[in-house]
Image (cartoon, rainbow, N blue to C red; front, side, top):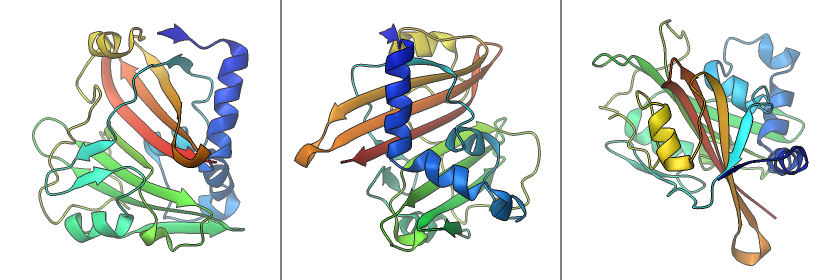
Length: 226
């Protein structure tokens, strides 16, 4: 495990941008989207809008399994569509399109137990498909203390996401064990990049927000680009 130097960090940020996520959301978070009630907020807006690009970044050597257990549905990044998530948990798919860029998302509000939280499923790209038909490429979950007017209550139990990486309520020690280094406060990013099939590049990115040594927000992404 090593902290990325400035040149390597910039290369990875450029690779991330070229994959389309930040470029899409930076455009969609323009005046047109900001004036709407339907918009990304919380941790997803920070991550996808590029506002965490300056977070300390570490490279991890072993990619995480991109299968996410969400109770009634197992979600595979870049394969499971927003329509499939909606068919299982209900809710309304929100979307925005600007100049060939499109993004769609589902947001659920959960208040079970002592962990009120929001879970976001996001799909984006330029492939021309309707947002509901696009595969999920980004998932985020975070603790919340306020109410979100535009987040839905799932129609069936949405179990706490069983992730292949440390998650909410885990702490700095869990991140250190998995990735080798972690702060006690603020944002940190972990990145992995590897060659995929047919000369593609697969990039995985995890962004954690920590408060007092505890994880209170996580966002993770998998994008395959040529």
